[in-house]
Image 1 (cartoon, rainbow, N blue to C red):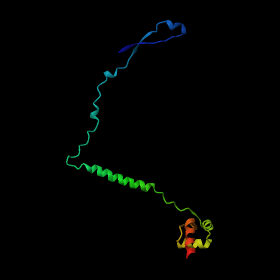
Image 2 (cartoon, rainbow, N blue to C red):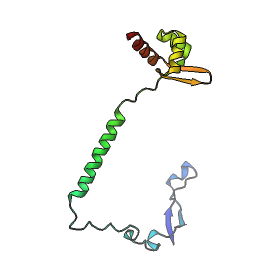
Image 3 (cartoon, one colour):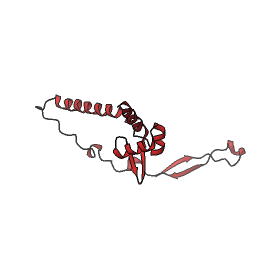
Image 4 (cartoon, one colour):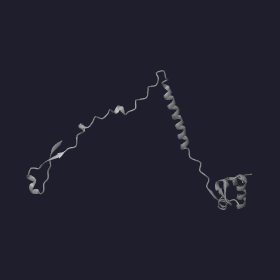
Length: 140
């Protein structure tokens, strides 16, 4: 199948008044010549069966309401600020910051009334825990 196309090709400005040449251009087969497309419904899954007529209408709503309550509880929990992890400092620095003698702080680390961690031969202590235990010890 061919179509007539008028092409405007002007080699210079003098030929502007001249008639444009006519060229026969082959055209690809049209969409109308293509085989028919199967109906879309053939590719779509049929809808699930309707619930039985005797099924209680409120069941789905009740399930959704219960899920909403669960999600709201999770959201409240997620919005609560996390408890900060203790900042551990070397024993000597923590004792100095808390105003506790080094040997006393070391004994408290061994006895476990303060938040501390031993790595190898070194102790790392939470300064806030050390200060709080100092206040408790001085209150006695």
